[in-house]
Amino acid sequence: MFKELDPLLHSQLRLAIMSLLISVEEADFVFLKEKTNATSGNLSVQIDKLNEAGYIKVTKTFQGKMPRTICKITSKGISAFEIYVKNLKTYIK
Amino acid sequence: METKFTEQQSLAVINEMIDRARNNIQKGNANSLIFHGYVVALVAIANFVLIYILPAEHINKSFNVWWLMIFSNIIDYFIKRKTDSSKIVRTQIDGIISYIWKGFAISISIFLIVLFSMCIFNPYNVQYNWIFCALITPLIMIMTAMAEFCMAKACRFKPFYWGAIYFWAGALLCVLSYIILGRGDVQFLILAACMIAGFVIPGHILNKKAEQNV
Image (tube, rainbow over all chains, first blue to last red; front, side, top):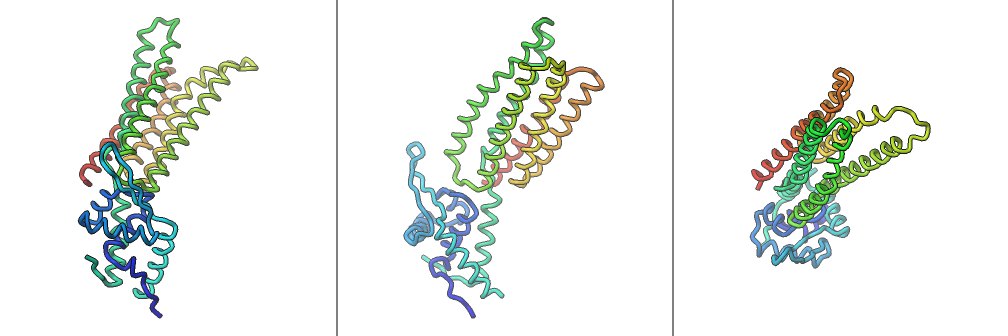
């Protein structure tokens, strides 16, 4: 029996962001951009969607005069990611 | 624009991203290690030189050069603060490494407090101060080796394993030099060599690797 995959995570860029954030404590927007090779605009939109869903927490700060966006996965995000991977396994088997 | 993709692609994305995050070494990560390597090596050499420069009755004062370590730790604090503030990612491994070195610093501090308390108070007037002094450098090197060995495992960086081995070998050499030559001053040269081989060189290799990763 195939279980439905979370539509919010079943998108290449959002899944990439979540996979990166699950491996680190917190990451800067620049780091996510470097690792996903996404454009700033697209990345920003997907980060907002994950933030609205409560999967990640976004903190905006300043480093000197430069604005910084720091993303951190939430416990809700970790659970959603774990369920997604568990459901994904049923398709792969 | 969103792209829908297959389950296999999804799994590939997860694996690839986790792998990219894991193999992330950032430029400047080893700055603190390199700084400490140079400072301790220079202070150890200065201690060695002072033993021969100072008049015989003041040789013990040569050890005062180690008070410079307090200033170096303050400078190191600012180096770390600058590096941390410009970090674009913070991993769990960073936290583990930070805790390893904090544990190391606490162990060293307690070890020195215990040792000097025994030497200063010495309630039973036992004549063992000389052996305590001869053991300071090898024991600090053993603790350094252990911390570096744990760090090597945490960040999966081979030169740190070698660094740990140099420190362990250095500790043995210190004791051997004392037994065979009957001299304690050689320990400072061994310590300086180990700091360069165990901290400075692996640190530069790590920074170089980080530059290539960018």
